Image (cartoon, rainbow, N blue to C red; front, side, top):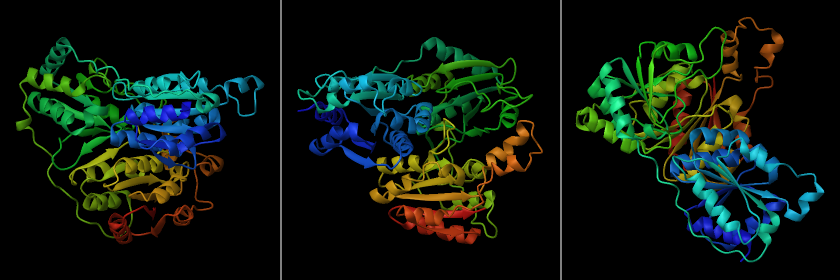
Length: 513
């Protein structure tokens, strides 16, 4: 057994089932090992940003790591933006990055780079194999790191001679550390703060899953507090039968307004809210001055146990909690607008859907309109690095092949990683992609006035315009092997969505706005 085979077998025996890959010469022994060791599904992506975004989407829905296989430092660098998003989503991801053979590094060949420095921007831990005999153990340790807490990014650097060298041995699986319990003192402190009034529980990350969010909402219902999330969580379980929760707006001025009366803010799996960007004469911190902020549970703590304890401390009960009822909008007609799109999706969203949302500006009405739809999952953009939507949907579809994935995709950010459509076609993934074709970086047009530039000139405006020439998303999709159609009115949109929902396999709708 060589080092590569020992690594793959160790990962398979430790529960890793999927590898998203864009390999090169240095990784070919790892690629060969994927053939020789059964149990690992290998999914080819044409660009490393697709690899890393898909690994993020898979982890969010599967609740466990996928591996990535990347070619040297440049390949890792190409995937960095979506690894940033995975880090912010606290997704468990194991990067396997090939490296030149140890004896070859001294010659500074063209693709030689400082892989460790590149990885350090996004990795909670970095492991470098020293030989074929130690590679599997290094892999087991890196995997345990990725599975720590809610999840994190771990990187394993594999020199080519460690992969092809003989003497590999399968390593035992390593269990990650147990998640920390929140102390009874913190529980009592939070309960006392809730009793003060003018309180809000701000839930994030794993606290937005069905049961933890219901526990937090039950406490809020009992104590008269507000219960909220911010629109950048990795996965929110919502729809009929889930807790009714408000969502804080992302724009800083609106968030400041929403939080102005809160005097006790209890954070569960969340950090203190701040503005996404700095703007002239707008505070960076969006809570009111003097607001008492209590860090009840960190993202890596045992959040459900914490909320069970807070439920008992406050005397709250899940039985008394009002839950979301079925409440769909009427199907709209007429022109395509953000509001008519929202109403149509609220009326059509199927039970069990997974929504990968990179809508940016067009999607601001969608969340409210879909709150009363059948139960579904909503995947946000926690890290803010655009170009994740299509790969995120790809990974989610690999994790959940029996569920319909709906990618709500801004056109500008979709162009960053549209190669992932090819992977959807190759794997016949059950993804409906809805592209909002407003043919501009509209979020940046909106930001011009926020940063004190209300009257931009023609050069500035041209940098935000992607309509000259206009992108043809239907042709782009067909070039990747995905069928699609273009719609220009809401009746056509409704018909196209129904068609896409009924299909097995990928489908794309370009929505001209």
